[in-house]
Length: 158
Image (tube, rainbow, N blue to C red; front, side, top):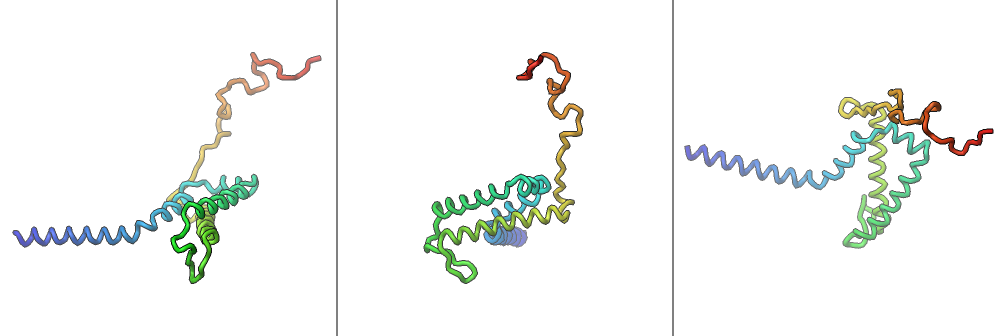
């Protein structure tokens, strides 16, 4: 009986060591996995694409990225003073620009995957149609032409 308890305790210790080793490998990648999961499953890219392209939102995204690079470069400079990426030595702000560009590329890649329909079975994005109801969500509080009790707002009657 004592051999069984010793074996079980060894098994628990080994499983705990394995869990610590695996979490040590995966934990640094967790924020990137959350970033990808958010842009892949939580964003309606049909609507966002319209905002980015047709309404000029892409310029705002690029400006936010530029500010992100500047703030990140000032707040968290590398210890050695430069970044070492792919065998290249890059200055602080250029290295941060590479990182932010990579995050934006992942963001837009997630959008293209969602728009292609590849992940539709896991994250179907359906939004309620506001035009499906007769009152258009206003609750019938006087936006129609026949409402009463409203003053004539600037219209001269002759």
